[in-house]
Amino acid sequence: MNIFGWLPTDATHIFFVLFLCFLIGLEREERKVNDDPYAFGGVRTYPLIGLIGYSIAVLSGGELIPQTLGFTVVAAFLLMAYWHRLSLSGYSGIASEMIGLATYLVGALVYHDMFWLATALTVSSIILLELKTQLENLAKRIETTDILTFAKFLLLSAVILPLLPNTPFTRFQINPFTTWLVVVAVSSLSYGSYVLQRVIRPQNSVLLCAFVGGAYSSTMTTVVLARKSHQEEQAHLYSGAVLIASGVMYLRLAVLLVLFNRALMSQLAVSFVALGSVAMLIGWLWSRKGYKDAPKGTGALEPKNPLELSAALLFAGLFVGMLVATQLTIQYLGVAGVYSLALLMGVTDVDPFILGMTQSASSVTPLPVAASAIIIAAASNNLIKGIYAYALSSRKAGLESLYFLLGMAAGGLLLLLK
Image 1 (cartoon, helix red, strand yellow):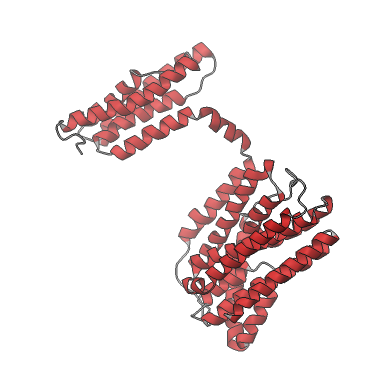
Image 2 (cartoon, rainbow, N blue to C red; image 1 turned 135 degrees about the horizontal axis):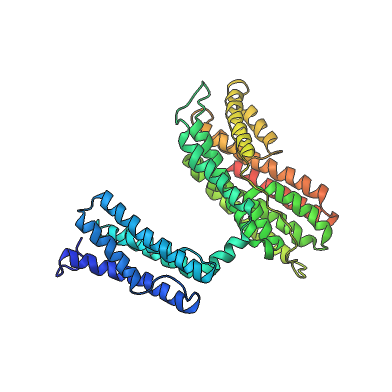
């Protein structure tokens, strides 16, 4: 690749190496002046390292072994420089030496016409160097449990999922890959909500926690807000927050329908988004009625790790169980049995049942029946949450929450008349 047509290819390469490595050297020069007088290298050293990497690649014709030997020699010189600096200052980081190795690679990458990769390596290195203070402060704020939670998310999505066969088994057509993909999708939504809760926790508010918690679990959020209402004489605030959390539940369900069944999505997603949005708007407006000062930092919701492997396995088991139960219900009890099952599932977490409907719709369960069952399950869940709120909240907040959730359940059932 010759960026400038009027220059020889080697001249273009050398210009590119010098430009990228000079940027690295410029950043290191600034650090050496302002922070560490013993810092290794600057605007001359790093371009020279880049030119060495490029020259060795040219002389070896791109062979890997000579370039690796050159990398080893440069690494040895950098180690000597680091040892010398350590003996002078007593303590020193090793970032400058690592950037020196990256600079050598920039030269080799340019020889192989990997301009994009060389640029990405340079820019990433500079950003990491410039954001030293911010990154160190971020590392102090991140707890060990957060790192472990993210590792579990990668385990579920990037390790386990690719290993599963994408083939249906048994007469119930259970597909391990699809089953675990459902687990990953639900875990992703829950994990996103968990991360937001961790971020907003120091300055959270009841309404913000209701919104984020609704994406995680509207039932759990309702229970927590109901109990919290005893500590604050703001019934409108907490009943409005409960309604917001249930509104978010419908948005969550719409997202799952978009991901797993486009036919059901076309029937329900728009209605669910509309119903959820209206509920959230009414909940917000109601929470402002008689508004004093929304409590800040009340700890209304304490986020829990949504990615325990045992919880993922339990959800997968529930999902498979719902698939089997739905098929058996259709076979032996008919449509009325499916609707009864939907009504019962509202008592617990509706996600396994609804996702089971997305997989059995059209093939086992008629599409209109699956859509109606999902509506019934969501309405039943709102009814149960209304009972929870009434039982656990302060009297006024409990009554308001019950009325709101009964109205929302009725509004959801009106979708059956479409």
